[in-house]
Image (tube, rainbow, N blue to C red):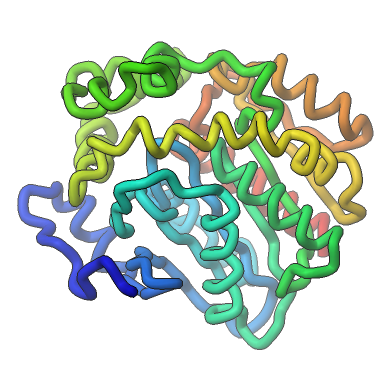
Length: 307
């Protein structure tokens, strides 16, 4: 049964930047959920599928999409995961397995006639990507993976250093914090993961806060943060995907990230020692926002090297 309206709730009160982003995409129903989807088709090349992190959305990729035309022949696909951004807001925890199901369904729908798919994952999206690779190892994934670029995601959760807000959301008072969180606290916590050289801007903070709270999403943080617990429960499966997937897997890392620190990078490399890594000094947890030109260069080089 579909528990969500087919029409998107009002965008009144959103910044012009967020409204423009919303209008550049569309809402598609996947498994009963309304999912915000951005796609752009190209006549040739792979499909690049972008997997965003917590607590943000596919809005994070907008600068990348502005820079790709003329530099890379590829179609692109991005979605807001269930509970995030402009997608539907369930009132229960949603496994990353369900998020991976959404990716599979959308790739099947937008897969440009069976072209290979290149996965780009950030933060929480790295674990969605690893679930897809685990399915590929099992021979049950519905598409061919051309290559993978993962960056600044705490794939080895035990090595990560979550910020205060994340720790509180995971604790017994998480539901209370979700209801009481205000914009000032959000700006402080979200801004703390950006680098000193590329701090969170006022416009970015405003847009991210609005998207977080769209359709009541800001009250669900204690449910959405459960992906961290799932990383621990499914560590053997997802760490195995890092170690055992036979394709081209690459890493890029903002070295000033206070959450997915270089300790996490080292832990990932311990699982897959020969992984190519592009280290990004002076950048924090959000390289694609902090320095979109540099991130785009890394992405283009990674995709070109895989094909």
